[in-house]
Length: 344
Image (cartoon, rainbow, N blue to C red; front, side, top):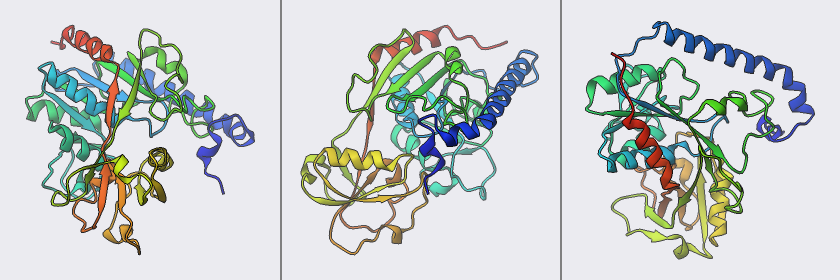
């Protein structure tokens, strides 16, 4: 049986049947946005943060490349002299444990925070706070750290959180599917919502051609990935290798991400003979999930690796990816931040 997402790319019998529910969803999302906008103007929502908040999100549900972009943005802000912090919902974080909000600590169990916040903190070393209520996470990071700018990993629709800059990440291969909101399509809000965001970044990493988007408007930019180095899962293991070192070899490919198939295709494009092991997004691995009855090496995504580093898995590797973004976007964001003035 095909999943509902299979029908989100075209107008078909299933999506058209669900269209009335989609219209209701869109209308409620619109009313919710208006309510929060008016509430902020009337001062009904008070935040103890006087720091600028940059929201990196999307109107298409999941799997667009937000986390690599957030890591890139943190590095750009650091290079410009800022002290960025990141807030996240912490999808997949255990409900049981310390009270919210939680400051990510690499010495604690990753399940307290979720894989993406853990990866962001491990990669950038900047403070990361997780809380299902992002506005509460913003207050926490403002009060307890020396950060001077906050990035929200996702949260475009979290309107209780004030924001200074909005950035939408769009998968250039899928774009906006059939253009319908959930459940008939993949959108959290109507495409017209993009008129009000500051910037749109097209993730072209999954396109066959980098000419997938022929022309960009003034607020539109492109992003792709650079990768070649494969790192050992255990720090005590061998030195890093490259994708070309595995060319022609049979490997177990492990991916618990939004679209595992894209990771498998990437490896095949580089000449690897892939045995696929797809898992659900944010999957919580046990060591026995990755024990295979042969001698072939294991290659996984970096997002999966942060959850598996304690496992004793011989010949296991992960592929880090680094976002490459049009440099003019960083300049525009920095210029915009210079104009920021906190409310008295």
